[in-house]
Amino acid sequence: MPDGKINPFDGAFQLRAEDEIIAHTRIGQRRGRENARISLNLVAMIDVVFLLLIYFLTVTDFKLGEEIYRMDLPQRQPSAQLADPFELDEDPLRIFIDSAGRDFDQYVISLSGPYESPATFEDLYDFLHQQQISEVTTGGFFAANHPIIVQPERSVRWEHAIEAFNAAAKARYTNVTFSKPR
Image 1 (cartoon, rainbow, N blue to C red):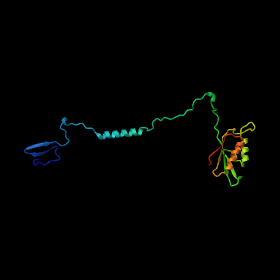
Image 2 (cartoon, rainbow, N blue to C red):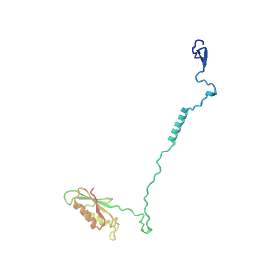
Image 3 (cartoon, rainbow, N blue to C red):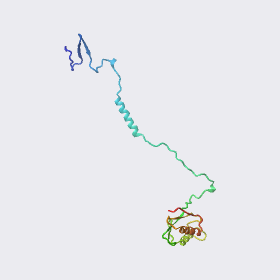
Image 4 (cartoon, helix red, strand yellow):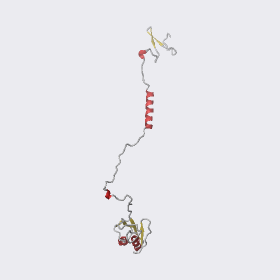
């Protein structure tokens, strides 16, 4: 090409410059070993790193660390003072008192548990006396020191709460207390 035009189909292109022809090789052609370069393919490495990251995130089991639990063990006691392992805790007998009207004879007595509600304070005394374990009565449920709690309602007359307490004291129970009104 004498006029200095570029032929895109030729392996090399030529330029005219002061009677010398400078030959340029196509970009990307190798001239030999002196221009050989080693390069890393980073895209493939990043793909492998992300695949490993995803693998370890899915396989790892995230659990809380080992914990220390406090254990309160009973103190050792001499064998003579050991309690009966079959002894049950004593649930207190609750006597609920409510005033049903303005008169002294208008009140309602109810007991906790599967017991029938006594109609009067005298019936309450009879029930407590019959259910006490003693040499005189047989088949009782409660010892003389069994806890009995008199629990009045908020609207109860004070005389009714005292009468329930007196019925338990008359039946010779020694552990009788009042509770806050419910």
